[in-house]
Amino acid sequence: MNLSELNIPKCKNFSGYKPCYSYENCLQNGCQHENDQTQMGIKILIISLDALGNVLDNTPILHAIKRKYPVSTIYWITMPGADKILLNNPLIDKTFTWTDEQRMILKQIEFDYVMNADKSDYACAFANEVKAKKKLGFLLNNDGKIIPANEGAMYSYMLGNDDQKKFRENTRSGVDIIHEVFDLEYEKDPYVFNLSAEEKEFISTYKKDIKYDDTKTYVGFNTGCSNLFPNKKMTIEQHVKLINILVKESNLTLVLLGGKEDTDRNETILGMLNDKVRSKVISTPTTLGLRRGACFMDICDIVITGDSFGMHMAIGLKKYVIAWFGLSCAAEIELYGKGEKLVPLGLECSPCWKKVCPYNLECIQMIDLDKIIQLTKEFAGKK
Image 1 (cartoon, rainbow, N blue to C red):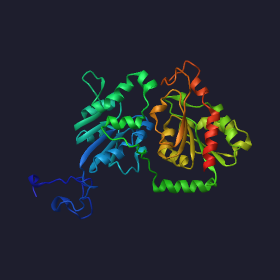
Image 2 (cartoon, rainbow, N blue to C red):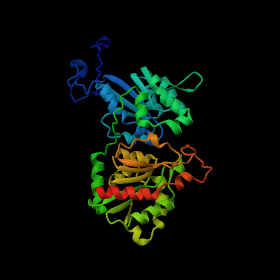
Image 3 (cartoon, rainbow, N blue to C red):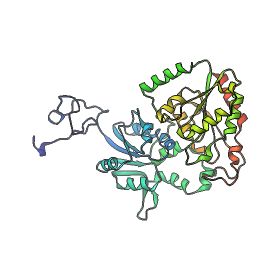
Image 4 (cartoon, helix red, strand yellow):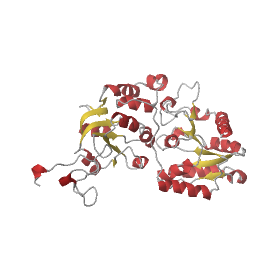
């Protein structure tokens, strides 16, 4: 065989480095395993880099892509750390991380579609550079300004540039909107977040360690949020008040959840409880990483949380979610009928998306703790 006779298989398993299967020569004999799952078909690159919650919130598009393009290869590029969200995802063929080497590889591939979900300078600049027959989402123009790449992206683009529309008029969820951005049909598909066999075994062992009782309702308190928007947090005193009231319910077991940034916060909450109450609260480890955090959350039936990555994780794990909102937009979150949103009523400054509050965090002070208690008891009663 000479160079002119070389016929490179359009197969997901073929790399050009070694045989796809031992002692099978695809170059000489052709692909022996050809089917809809192995053929590359339509090649799609998804760019979703920023904010862990947004990355998870964008995973429902995978269902719609596979409906529209059953024979397809889907690549997804995201930030290091966020790639852990996409592990064990059967709808993604390969995950790339935001490094020079990985971007260099992607810029050598010619895609049918590039779908950029992020309105950031660097994501849009990268979308400009990638070769594709069609680009959807957001790009940069010649002045370095973010622009919509297609008509479907116009609503999302205008929403970001119009506070009245974003804060007061919009009633559509972000999941709904991102489908429109990418010219996909929205059918309320769920998030895609799958635990591995090892993680399921870890959960099973952990349940034995804590003497898990499936006759009880496990109530998780996701106590923190990212440091980017620290004012999404309920106060420590509010958490303590909720715990002191709910711990009296014999059918409830309370669980503290959080990431490494919440370690000190959770210890402070525990320290403010008396010995009797503290002994009835499970404090899960906060420093073992995102995937282990998901394992600890998975033991819960209910997750009480602000608008944070923890909230999105609870949605991805299909938990009943009680979420409060202050600075962010409640309408943009899809709970899939499994939960309640608590929004401060009559507060003109909310939502605002400000990092510093000039009004003493009224939206947090107004969180309806009685409603949280009521919803928790009602859910537990149904179980």
